[in-house]
Image (cartoon, rainbow, N blue to C red; front, side, top):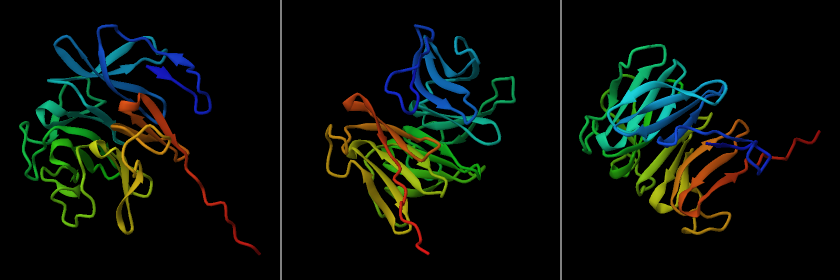
Amino acid sequence: MIVWLNTNSVPITNISLNSSETVINVFVTEVGDIYFGYTLNSTSGIQKLTSNLTNSVSVMETDSRCYDVCINKDNYIYCSIDDHHKVVRKSLNDTLNSTRTIAGAGNAGSTSYMLHTPNGIFVDTNIDLYVADYENNRIQLFHKEQPNAITVAGSGSLNITIMLNHPTEIVLDGNGYLFIVDYRNNRIVRNGPNGFYCLFGCNGCGSAANLLRIPRSMAFDSFGNIYVVDDANHRIQKFHLISNSCSKLN
């Protein structure tokens, strides 16, 4: 894992992990704790880096790789297991490996309680779970403790305002607006008061600063800037938040 400061293009830290581990994803909490999904030989799960960033401890074991990791405000950790078509959850306060399936049936499907290759996940402040349902080309919303989802974007949604092509990530901002990485459409889309619209990568794929090629994931920083993993361009793109500079004249 490589760490950069916000204003520096030179990495400040290179974190060495077990050379045999395949790291799938990284999740950093607001207090700086680092969790990552991994596979190692026949085992998979989530580990947490210790405070000195030199060792890691297991916090969750799973029956296959975690495509994405998320932690909610109640200290529960979530894992989307894409090839088993489900999302599982565990309390970080639980010392046992007692996981629970909270979304998906464990086999591929397109009904309201099923998923087909779930990718990115996001848990909001209401403990509602959003899932980028990759092969079903939709975003599913599972309300807290509910087995059946509502399709909020893409194929099968009640008010179709945008079609998705294999979404891989879903993020909510502080205002509750959805941001979606539309993987095979090479773009980032978001919703607003008037529905969904394209935000970045709106003119096809490419390597120019305003274009993307197979974007895989995205995240906000504390300033509202957006970072995108631009997979096929082998880069991380940063899109700056531009504040309204106008002020009221007295």
